[in-house]
Image 1 (spheres, rainbow, N blue to C red):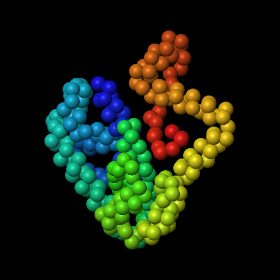
Image 2: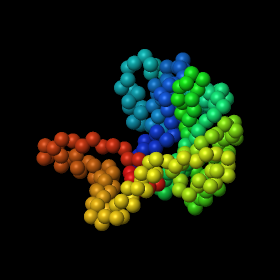
Image 3: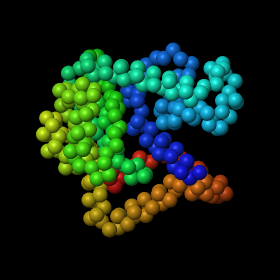
Image 4: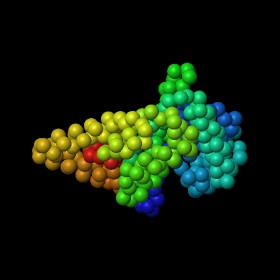
Length: 258
């Protein structure tokens, strides 16, 4: 049961990293009554088989809208997701082909299971002078990865999306990779959040009082990230008539700030 909860938490925690939709919020119209269902599965990273799980079936039975006249199956949903993905890929590729210059941002991050991934996002100004951004790939990295692994993945992504000669700038949160990016023929811009992380960490190292305080806060936050601990806290809040705390989904990055 705990493993199932953890898997769900990992899926929802990283939903923004994996969304195949454009980050500017525009979506293609699909003449399909299952669009809201597909959007929910995609944005929250649910498996397509969720439509056959007891909880969803119970929800489905409670719905009396004409939208759900025919109960969806996992096979139907998988086919529609594949079709949606193909259409979105074509749309993104068309936009990439229409411009001469793009920038990439590459974020290396860890899961709670200490697996390392790299998410690459493409940014551009289209022919209408509108900023556009798409997540192109999220790829796994070796346990003890090197800078050559990151550059290799970026080159593969550039080749796959036909943007190798269009990339001008790469922004990344990986330290010490400037020379490797320069060798690939791209300009390098350090990640602002990563730079801020370094500054914050060095500041704390210089103050034992603040360092101890932050470490305690991190331990408290880590403890209450557990669902059972949150349940106990909420019960205590009701007993003491305290206002309920709004829980935010944490973002885990390769750094000190969370």
